[in-house]
Length: 409
Ligand code: PLP
Image (cartoon, rainbow, N blue to C red; front, side, top):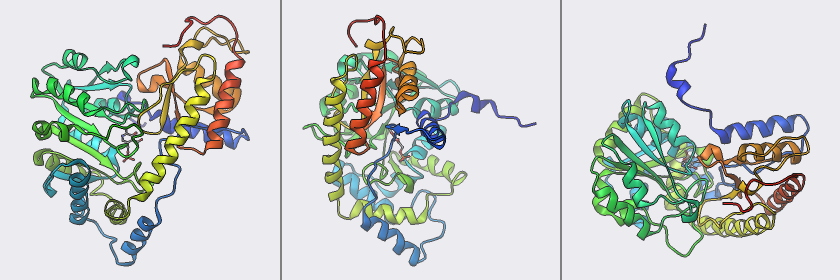
């Protein structure tokens, strides 16, 4: 008989992977499923990056590398931090992992003991609470108010911190809300953090290059250099260079933390893929023009989706400043009934109705800690996005009855 360890029961499968799988199953049954669930760019990896990988293979870079990443890639990463974030890191303060996800996993596994608390501002990327739980920790959710663009408020952070707090997870631009913290907002959070030296900060900057507003991207260690000694700055090539499948992410922070993470990695993957590391060097040091080109395309798509969604009765969404998701309120639909007689009580019901009635796959906000909203990815072609919005409008038109609230949140 198979025994599953209790630690596995503390976590859920990733909702976005599940949604992708469900869409594929329904397609296999012949349904015309349109999935706006992707957490990855729909663009190709730039050609010069692919060529670097081919060269690496031809040159025989096919063996194990240093566990924490090749010296050449660490140098490229140190160069990126200096150039783009004005942050200085030595090679011993950098780790390369199999995606940013592994870097985050390593960090929490190395530092969170049973009962330790990890502050997770909501809405949050689905993996933070589950990785914290797997490590034996307790995620402490703190809502970022919708009226404040879903951003963590300093007073709420102050209230959430206890003697057991180990980490604050900061993700800007945010998945799923797109919320992007300004310099001033980070400084206000830094003020609180200075009073609590036991709290470390993991800043997940994976969407750094997908910022659409006027304010330049800022990261905590840059705006509050005194906190660099307890900040792990996480980033990667997945979103910026359309390289999700290559699985290269990195983190930079104090040497003692990085050393522990490398130790853990030595007993899990033995290090990231050698060929993908060579490709990541080309990404970080080669031509950067694909970033601006893709950003422009995303911005245009964002504007198209926002306009189409806000024209639908009962759907409301703010314009996201970053990432490639819209996080829309559907709370004005709660209380309405589908033709099959199901009452829509939360975004799970709404997302299920979208799939059943209109073959549209979206993600329920409950997965991100906000059950009044749902997430659509705009990493898809304009025609697909417009068709998605038409399907949402049709799904809305099928609902009848009296809503619980007159106005969405
Ligand atoms: N962090 C956030 C906020 C994400 O949305 C994702 C991927 O969706 C990741 C990290 C993981 O990135 P990687 O592909 O580098 O593991």
